[in-house]
Length: 250
Image (tube, rainbow, N blue to C red; front, top):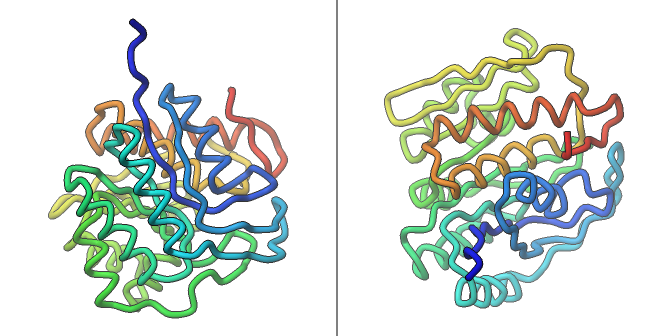
């Protein structure tokens, strides 16, 4: 009898350019030898360099899809991408945890797309704390960490967030420490340095990173190893060509 595949679930938006969102997640999952399931939170119209529009899925539809997926498949790790609000995210997290408290949730807090489109206008701090306490890892970039905490320093912001959950502070926009990420776990901070230089920027690289981490966790890696290996994967993805759309099979 064939071995059952390791399943992971992405709850995120659809990007027709396939550089970010669900399609990027599924590509990443496949390259990591896990089976990717998906639930759509939004239909976007975008290319690698311009965001045109977005239509959000009703929370009831997403919760119903979650019910079907969780009843049908054995899922230990779920990645959540773009959502219209933290109240929406809170309902997703609450439902998942009520269904199976052992599921690990990775949240890529996309507050603004790389093309400059604002996804979330306001952040409810009480909802944010509830969400953080019930997720395994959040993966903000510097700007997102600052916006989530209303601080002026991204590292201080990540430290504040880590009081509630693990935090991977992405350094892709850090001009002073190019390409250096920081993993915050309770009272520990681990510096993750790049292994490749002169990489080309890619649309959806944040989605790819969080999806790779999700896959690695599902495969049984500890958090530090999951992040280190995911960073290596993303570096090869960024190095795949000079355009804004990257290849995964490299």
